Length: 188
Image (cartoon, rainbow, N blue to C red):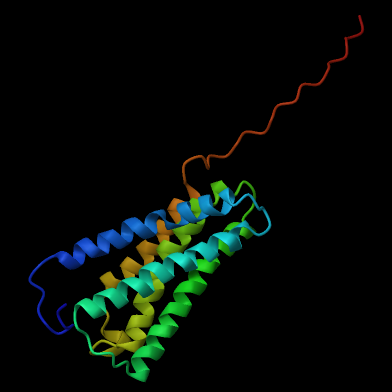
């Protein structure tokens, strides 16, 4: 891997970004399916989350250990790096748990709200990411130096999430059922 300061000469980073888009794009759907397939309407979401934790152990603990060993990495872990990494893991896990809690609190049928929940998350998360990144690493000139296209992008991300949520397929308003009433015979 190249250090952050080295110039990028390939688009490998973009392939990995699209890998993440694909994986996170199906995350909510797969998680909801796991929850419902547990066959436990009360605790199914917690059972599903338990297996998310097992998957995190396999992918986020065993795989990096193997890569570190294969790369001959030193086993020095500075406290600040460990601290930020643990915080990142905690907010990631709390966010994943929040997805399940949102599914559990959504009106029935929940399957109609899976795309809504995920659209809100995936439209809102980049906005939060951009604002927190700027707060932590302010650009030259501070907030005043940020050009208008950035703010337009924030607005469009929020609008996109709202549009996907509002106009998801199958969300067309239903017509009220027409009830027929018996008509009285008219007096002659």
